[in-house]
Image (cartoon, rainbow, N blue to C red):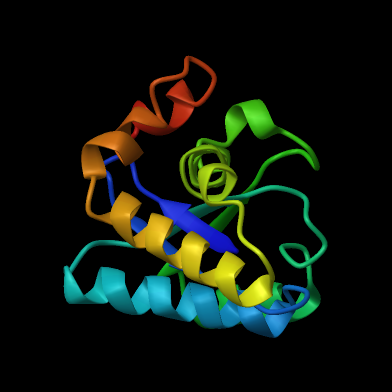
Length: 142
């Protein structure tokens, strides 16, 4: 699962079978940029951690090719407390996966997808993921 959230409560996500690759991440970034373009917003700022996919040369090349329309800001390799998007998976796990106790990958994907779609319809919850003091650097800019 990969997701992106905004301080305004927007949620975008994608699910992958297997390992996330640079190509999968680029496809996700492309969709984020497309969605932002439909709303005529400025550049898309994406805050990422130090995951190897986020640091891939292909990703850097893609970001450069957008001429500033997409900007990545990298946090230290493991900085969970600085990354409000971590709350998306916490929410999906606690309120979706755990109570459902899925039996197998197909049911797991269905449960996760349903929970993410529900969360997408509840922007007030997504905005709440920014309530911690640690990610105040994000909300100060929103």
